[in-house]
Image 1: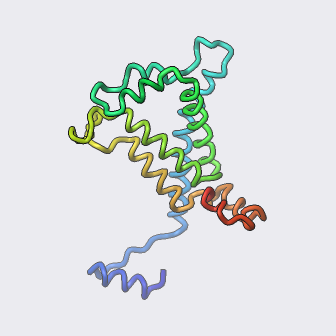
Image 2: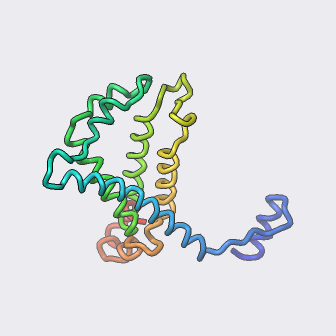
Image 3: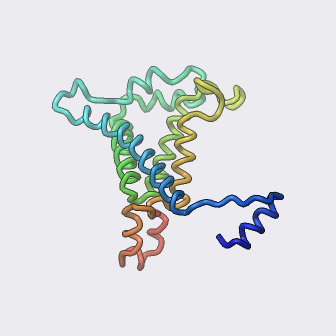
Length: 191
């Protein structure tokens, strides 16, 4: 940022002081956010997947108990979630979705693709935790409207929007390949 741009910004904001930042440190912050969010998702998925893939089917993780018994009575989508209980597809999508989305974020691979699906999962988790509908103020266990799932969804949206995979990630290298160069639409999945 040039000094004239900073001066103009300061004038527009009605301030006489300048705020300076370092792209170097912003890069580290984005990398840390991407890896930490990736680890959160990966850990949630891999723990489910390991129990599902062990030799003892009695230990298999399933979302059925949560979907059938833990959705609040006043949740506007309660019947939808109850209808999903016991579906092997829901279990597989949840386990593999968390695991692969988290791994992709950790590696910085297909970050926009992974951020989109991760945010969508978080919105489903948020919807399942609602304790009432719009007329009740979209209450959650510890407040209204915003909980950790919304924070995660917003963080994932931000990581995808800024192209966090380009910062010490696989996407930085993938964008230079001839496949991506000749198919620019692939950049919508990378970054």
